Amino acid sequence: MTDENNIKETIIHDMDVMKVEEKDGNLSNEEAVDPNNFADPTISKKKLKRLAKKEKWNAKKRRRKEENLRRKKGIIDDVENESDANDEDETKVEGQEIVPKEPQQLSERNLQRKQEFLDRLKNGSTILVDCEWEEHLTDKEIKSLIQQLLYCFGANKRAATPAHFVLSGVEPGGKQHSALKKLAGFDDWIGFRCESEPYTSLYEPEQLIYLSSDATEILEEIEKDKVYIIGGIVDRNRLKGSTHQKALSQDIRTVRLPIQEHRSMGTYSSVLTVNHVFTILLEFQATKDWNIALEKGIPQRKH
Image (cartoon, rainbow, N blue to C red; front, side, top):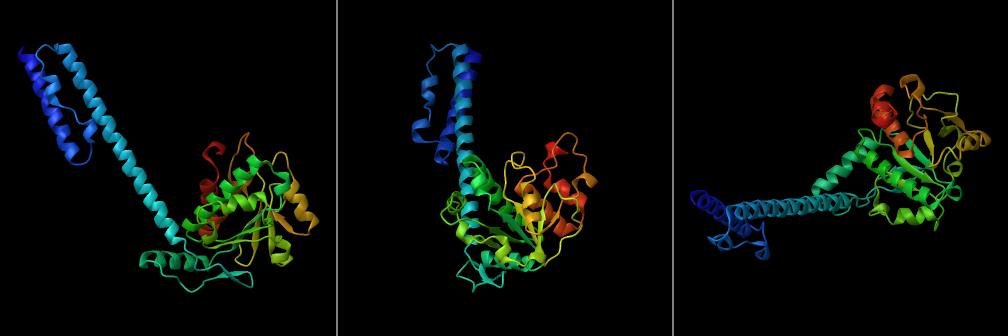
């Protein structure tokens, strides 16, 4: 009986601890357990152990659930703060350059963060995603492309040396445009422009450089006054060579990333997604080191 009494005392102690947690807000009233339920001397030692184990597991489960809720709440708060930081202050266009508007009533911290980004942006080149391929993309591919563009924006905002991020050929009311408009805060993206016109109408031909894995020339440096074009295509096997042929037909210079010269891709294709190419360009712009840039941008499965 001594062992049974010890077990009962342990359970009663655990229940008291749980009641204290309840007062601290970790347990609801409905989930609180009355230790008197375990005080019945007719309950066997085996059943007491089973009840104790179950109750401890339930308490742990409740605490874990509440921790997850608090963690999610923290993430939501971070997203809301990030959204607040995205209040537009710079997307006025002046001769194709992105220049600041007058600052809105932002918190001092968000205003400082935006100003720091704009200061870094002054040293950046322009990276443009050619979105004139909508008619060749399936709905699933468009959804994937939009997700990749979202990654590009996030990478650009965090970059040591961000780029002027531009989309061209986005048809108003089209599938790409509609999907973009559904993104939270899209209209307030900083360092970004979304244009319906093709890139040939936005920039001089000598400024344009189209990146293509089919090009023979290797990209050796990134120049501030150049515009580096990434084809807005998801399934490059189905449209293999399309971006290269398009650029050649427009008398636009084409280059490829020096992947073969710095990485052994094995049986993997050297064709990368839009956001991977975007990240590589950002990293090389900041570091001037292709090894670092490719290590950062190429997925681990392709190393």
